[in-house]
Length: 472
Image 1 (cartoon, helix red, strand yellow):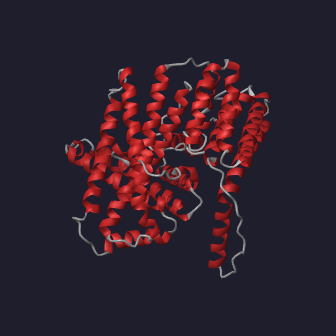
Image 2: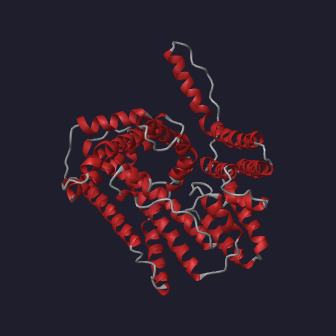
Image 3: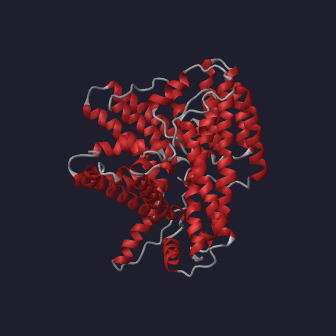
């Protein structure tokens, strides 16, 4: 079930009023039923996977808490890790592993295996397995106590607003909210509806419309004139942000209708002036998860620069692989890791000595740093949309060695103007949030904003495509 469908609108219209009418004890059951209905509307059998992960971590966490034996605690933790990652690896990486193995056989001069499994990737499996696994690890570390109410656990893993594409919530943040009695609030309803409409605007008016324009790059495998490729590279950067942040907006808005606050997943990454700040502002809950459960256990940032460099490279490689079982995502993660390593060594070895100089405090350096960061993201970002490496090769080859056409063409001139406007709106939105200008926005004016956004979405939207992160 897509957020952009009438089916989802119907679900919200049914669930939200009923949630506040029901007694507190029954609300958790409504959330569970709505969540499984939301997910199983796509493919019912895969609801079993969510139930399995929920029960596995529910009993594993209780087992960890009830024993004093370190060995037994580790056994329960390993059950959770292998159970959840086993599901993820089987559905997401089996065919990719076969492809890699066949490639190695080809290099060795051996005949490849004639094997291909027709495995349909469950939507959202990368998100909910990380969420429930993080819960068990936190119990093992003694950070939280295990959940004793199995219904709360089922709701925590399957909570429908953020089930498919996050935010990846921590148990200590979401579980108490699921057990709290939330009173009906016009402010929550207004804020939730506005956030949902803003998400629909970004998805259906911005992202989907730009994707239709940029699709020839994919269909023609990058065999286009340089001026078009340059515009489309910027389009792709806007598409991925508008699409994914739109999902997050709708998820946060939907939860807000029930009085539940989800974690912000973006903090205006296209305003950041270095790659480290960028990643701390992009897909925040995934970055937080990787830091807490992989990066810091590996040693994080240490005095050993080589070890720190390896840690940065390794976690970005894993983030790339997490995004998709394909060579383009692996390379995307590797290049992001290289960019982070370069920035880290620049900051440690050189910038600490140079930052006191006037030039490095001035606006020219800030502008250069900002442009370099954004261009790094945009140039690597082409890999995110590539179906194969042929597209990537042709894209960069034609961009730098192709024959330029008319730069005064409508696509080039109006395209770059639109890109500038999108970045400018992103900047204004960031300043509005930073200064909390909407905090005291009169409640009686919000319906007018809703009507305006609804009108724009209906008039200017195109047929919605699937959310990009549904494939992860």
